[in-house]
Image (cartoon, rainbow, N blue to C red; front, side):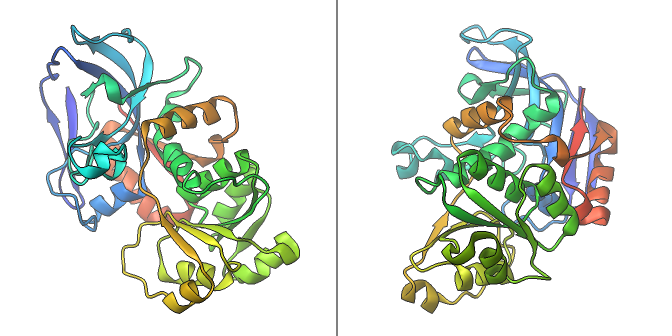
Amino acid sequence: MKQAIMVKPGKIEFNEVKVPEIKDHEVLLKIYRIGVCGSDVHVWHGKHPYTPYPVVQGHEYSATVEKLGKKVKGLKVGLKVTAIPQVVCGECDPCKRGDYHICDNLKVEGFQAPGVAQDYFVTTIDKIVILPDNFSFEQGAFVEPVSVAVHAVNRVKNIECKNIAVLGAGPIGNLVAQVAKAYGANILVTDLSDNRLKIARECGLADTSNAAQESLHQASKRVFGKGSFKLAFECVGVEATITSVIESIGKGGEIVVVGVFGNKPKVDIGLIQDRELKLIGTLMYKRGDYVEAVRLIDNGLVKLEPLFSKHFDFYDYSKAYTLIDTERDKVMKVFIDVN
């Protein structure tokens, strides 16, 4: 079978390797679509702090069941599926209390463990999430990023009818906003890119603001009136964005930090103390988030088609990164077609 392996930053090689054997409790998947995410791009540039080389990438994907181990029950060959890419120890304190997504020894397929950039991939039944028959392979590959958004939104309680600012209209910011809207919140989306804000509106997120032309305080007053907002999701990961939300959010507000900060930001801790603000972290997802993501997509509560940017053949993997680098904000989600 074919396999893509990133041997060093910016260089992908293709190998022919044997189809892996499976054990009694394992499942062999045939991989169809892989979504390229921002973290993958960091690996491409050699800027992901926790990824060694060489590495087989790919963690957002859709597949079908190709073969079942002798002791696997509840699945059948041909089912359309995706799977959770977390490798956890099950022994640390977070794992024992059920927070395995922040396992002390967490590895993620495609980063610290081999990913799915190959024809066939072995996983275990506990990681598999069955997809509806009507799902496209593109929708299936989107379950992972939608799960990130579901988990982030559920880090706070009772968001129905709340005024929420989502900073960042890239794929994750867009999905966070869509999930929050699906749960009944009033949404303001901000970004520096008019193109990404246009796509947000195509996804049903009517209230947007270009942060280069309007401050967050001005935008929130325009959209929410005197009520402003007391909940925000930072989905960019830069100092300017977290600073603006700390300065603009209402007293007693909650800020969920979704963006990954490549550089350590300086923030005004005095404002957090004085205004009793809450900073809330969010990382990845749990199995329930995957199940909920499938439900939201299947019921049309999250609109994905405007985020589909381009498909690349498996052997054009490098061209996908080049497109992302050159087109930047014009690109939302790029897919690698494996089979």
